[in-house]
Length: 295
Image (cartoon, rainbow, N blue to C red; front, side):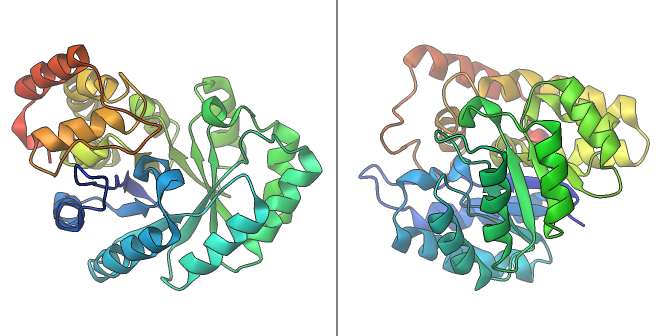
């Protein structure tokens, strides 16, 4: 069962836009040393739409083995809005023996219920466990309860959901209905305590790229029954968590990592550099943050 804090790893770039391998490996090992239970490679935070096939394979070649050797869980992002491409990505991922593949509900083309089920069935046919990534704000489509029920009934390989819906009524309904069926994982960093209170499995976090020690501490304290202490830590990091999303993810997170010594803040177009105003806000928050909470 997937459980704990999973960091959605960024892809560090040099200023010329090429892959920054030393910074990638430095970041990966810092994450493992921080005690995260798992890593997500090639998720949205990795700017996967801008990566070429050779770059994706290079990232997997560099990172998959150290994650597995450290005894941590590995999730590989595979989903696209094209079923054939998703299946192709699943075959690539399978060679690295991940604990699961992350597959987003198809964006832009907004499949109807039968198409949605067929899409995930095709992905599941490769043989890997699946984590469905539900993020209506980016895909333009919210899974209706009957469609989710059909997916879970017809696809036994569907073992988890990364939930990035801000509708807490929907979140509660899903957490209660499938408490014995799914690893239900928080996908919104700012809602981590609420998800923990619903006895969910953990979190897939972009902010953990910078705040891994804090997220691990929050999770551990909560699981030990020290819920007030867990919330106290969350309250301290909350302003920086919010600042991670002042502009489109992962632009602000990459700037924070740059300030912490993990490569440049470079992103690939169509993402661009964050504003001077937001850099100043982030600089102030980083300076105020207890160092033990930061990578």
